[in-house]
Length: 433
Image 1 (cartoon, rainbow, N blue to C red):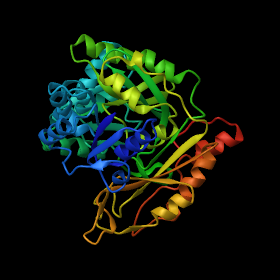
Image 2: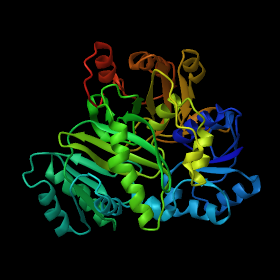
Image 3: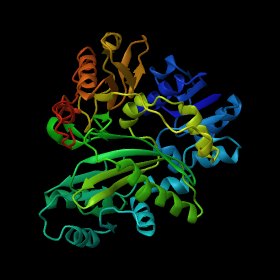
C-alpha cells in the first residue's frame, strides 16, 4: 500500500511512525514532512496550504490513500479535491470539517443531535458580547469561557475569572472581523477521545488526556498542548462506550442526515462534569499531542483502519487492539512560547534521549544550511516514554527530555504526575495531571 500523509508536525510524525510498523509496511510519503519524518518516509517539498500541489502529488505517486493531518487544509477543502480526483482520503470534506472550523456550527449540530455540551451564545458585536457573558455566567462566580469561532491552532480560547480579561479577548476577536462563542464553564477533568468515522459508523480509539497550560500546575497561558498520556486509569468504567453512544454516533448520524457525511477523525474534547459527560469541542482530525501517545499504544494495523474508513466501510477493518501499559509524551517548546517563540536554536541530544529508552517525535524542526537540526516552530519536539504503567512511562519521557539541549526551551515536569501517583497508590483519583 502506498500512503501520502499531508503535514509537517508531531502529529504527522506519530502517524507515520505507527504506519511504518504495519506488516507489511506501507510505502510512505509525506508533504512536506520534517527532519524526523524523513527517516521513515519520502518527503516532498509541497506546502500544506498548496492544495493543487498536494492533489497533483497524490496523482503522480498513484497513492492508495491520503491521510490529512492538520485542520487548515481540511477546512480549505483538500479532501474534496482529492475525492474529486478519484483518490481515497482519510479526512472530512470542507463542509464536514466545519465541526472544527466553526464552533457555532458545531453547537448547532450538537443541539440537533441531542449531544450534551455547554450552554453557549455566539456574539459578533460589542453589545452581544457583554450580554452574552452575563447570560452564560450570570453570577460571575465561575470562570468565563470565550472562544474564537474559527480556527485558532488551539490558542483562541480564554478561560478566566476576570470579566475584563474575557471582554478584552472577545473584543480583540470581534475587532479583527471575527465572532466568539461564549460558554458556561464546565467543571471536572477533561478527556480526549478520537473516533474513526466512515460517514456512518464510529470506531473509538483509546482515551487520552492532554495539558493545555504552559506551566506546571496548569498555570500560564493556553498552548497547543504541552503533553499527554494514555490510558486514563481513573476514567469511569464504560466511558468510551458512553461517548460513542451519546456523542459521536449521534453527531455522525446528524451530519449524514444533513447530507455532509463525516469521514475521518472526530476528535471529541470532553469534560467529565458533576452532571455527566459534556462536549467541550469537536476537532476534525487527530489531536496533537494526544496522537503521540494513543498511536504508540495501538497494536493493530493503522493503515487498514484508515483505508476502510476512507472507503466508507469500517466493517472491513478489525477492531483496534491495544498494547498493555502506558505512554506519556512531554513537549519541548521554544524559548518564548506561546507568546513569541524564538526560532533557529540548535537542537542536540536526540540520539542520547532515544538511547535512554524514549523516542522523539519532531514537530517544529528544520535543517540549517550546515545540516544542523534547529527549531522552526513553537512546539519543537515531543518526547514519548512507554512502560508498564504511567510512572514508568513518565520516567522514560523525562529522562529523554533531560538529555536534549535546546537553549531557553520550555517543558512541563508534571505531565501525568498526579495520575501516575494515583495509579500506583490505587487511589484512582481523576485529574488533569
